[in-house]
Image 1 (cartoon, helix red, strand yellow):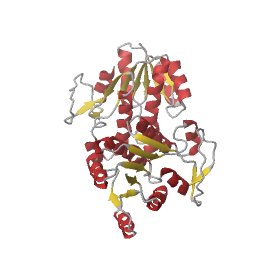
Image 2: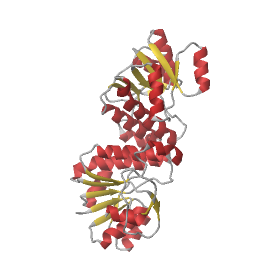
Image 3: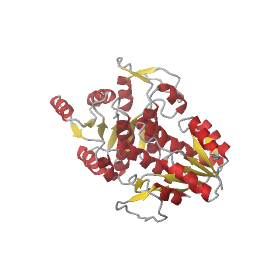
Image 4: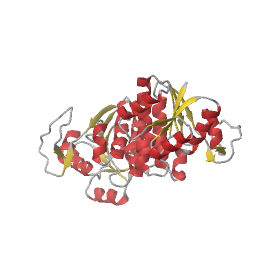
Length: 186
Length: 186
């Protein structure tokens, strides 16, 4: 198995890198910015350039170069604006899902958001457009033939990982350390 | 037949209202703003309040009240920001598609954009996030069991309608009067 972490410089992505290193799981850290690639390489972390706003052909080349048979999608526009949310969280994610079968990739792990399936919570969240993008990316993934896992973590914290999580089919609130999310993905 | 025009105050929507009146086709003009509803009613145009950012239940009630068996989706966030593009052009549209079968509606006409299926044109357009939203709304519609038509007009103008259009499976450029788009929909 070889994992391509798309969004390896995000808060969860960085912890996932450490987690996969600790478990000696083969991976490539998918990154877009040159300075991030240099910094990771300086730390001996295997990297793969990937730009989710590029054409499907370019993204396909990036994923193929990584040699991965598994994708973890942990990228997100964050606070960069809802134009980027459309480009990264929605279209960027779906482009990788569409390309996966062409590259022989069956396993796909999506880092989603806790309320992406519960629109009754979107209004009061103040970030409804973000939930819309995540919702339709998740929905698209469920419609593919990929072996997928969609992770919907609760409120994320930077606390120390506890190695303990609570799995709920109906989220009743509560927080989870990003380090524990990384462990779940690993 | 009774048509609900969602986005009846848009540039195409307004012309479609006139077109359906001229053809004596039963319709309701779907509008969100109170002042638009009052203005249309003053002109004797049948109206239906509908807010695409409302919950599915509220939207369902609005569509049901209209008594329509056909939807024309001509709404759009326009320049209101890409948060609204996600809420209206993507999620708003898909909510009405999901609700249509529950309301016995089979016929659905989507006013889309000419390049929504050709991502090679998105980058240079300067409005790629808009195309992304339209692309996935169209794609979702194709996956439904609705009797749908997706209209991809070329560059829109406010010129007089000509009653002449050119249908191309591969768009080679060229413009079309919004009045002619309204005639195509009608």
